Image 1 (cartoon, rainbow, N blue to C red):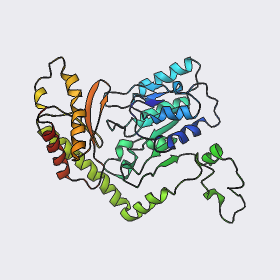
Image 2 (tube, helix red, strand yellow; image 1 turned 135 degrees about the horizontal axis):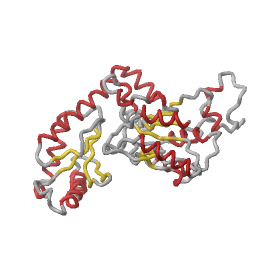
Image 3 (tube, rainbow, N blue to C red; image 1 turned 180 degrees about the vertical axis):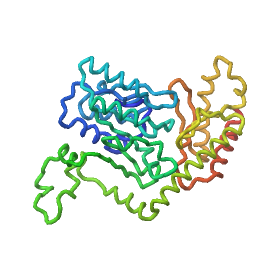
Length: 346
């Protein structure tokens, strides 16, 4: 089950597929539960891709409702599980999200873990985007309950800015589960009589066999920055996101989608022609066309690049993800000034 606004994983790396494989291992599955807002409505698209790759089919994924902030609703997760069981399906995995792609939402992991524990389900947490917050003493509360997950996907190449790609799959299991899931015992590659501990050979434990030593990027960065250096990087990103939010509130023509709890700052640029005209029947339709026009202008000028997207019933809005450690308050000021300049004739 997945929540409907989850963050990043399968497209860039196989960690979500790995987690699904581990949950499937040793289990006969008639139908998996789709996560939503279970995978939640805000879950990452990799959940459905994982179900397809495993042969379960995308219909085996059930979506759990998310609340207005994009967080999975545990009560609906419980309801979806009951419905699946009543239909003769065999739920086996719930995919929660810590740091969804658009709104940066963190699912309530303690409550979700309680549901999983009651029903004997594997809890996977997609913390690809938000997992690095654990390194901050100030903000790690956003991931309360993650210690109860059976598996966690984490991408240091996102918030920590490790070189692409750098992804980790963390497991509670200590029984060499990856080997049992994927091992093919190819003796021409994975000899068992080597002079060193053959448990160090990871090639027979993963889906793709040959791969780069991605963990070296994380190790080198951690050695160079230290715990405190990485914590400062995260805390500074939060502080800069807060600066941007407060500046948006001060300016005419800028409207927050919601108060962010993470580094995803989502807002509309309301052009002069639409200001004070929220009651017009075509207001939202016209507002939704503004972000694509501004995106084209900024790209053609080469001044900046900001993502935009619709979300549920909300029309297109900008999403600024404040993660680059080189960003400053001056960059945030430039961003807003440039939007105003590019959109002054709209």
